[in-house]
Length: 136
Image 1 (tube, rainbow, N blue to C red):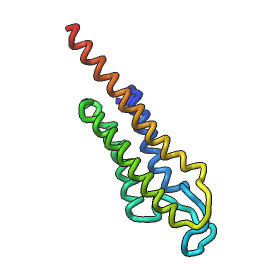
Image 2: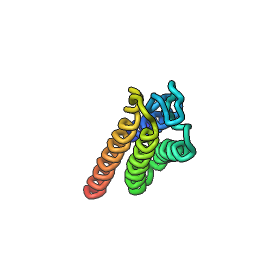
Image 3: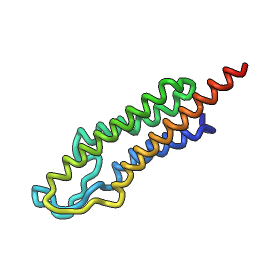
Image 4: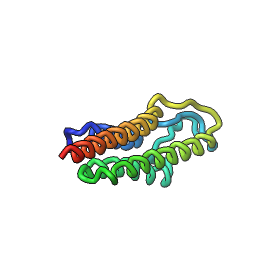
């Protein structure tokens, strides 16, 4: 389980997802006039719920190492949920009057990349097992 590179990618995706609770995505002046305001994952219920689901899905997928056929669709689901999360952040950013994206906003790109690399590694494992079964 741990020897497989996709476990590392999925663990990275989960760690980045849960790190968004600590680090801000956007900072500036919101519509209510609060000036040093930082947008984090725990600002709204929908952002928090989607972030927990993405992080939990990545952790859950690690432990399905014997079911590679199920891991790839879960990685694709993780990418789609992260795209939804980025859209939700974009919608929240539109409520700000002025501000800038934080450097830690790149965590969301890292999550998408980690899910993609994990799916690619799982596919390689499937191909290797299929080729070895053919040789038997």
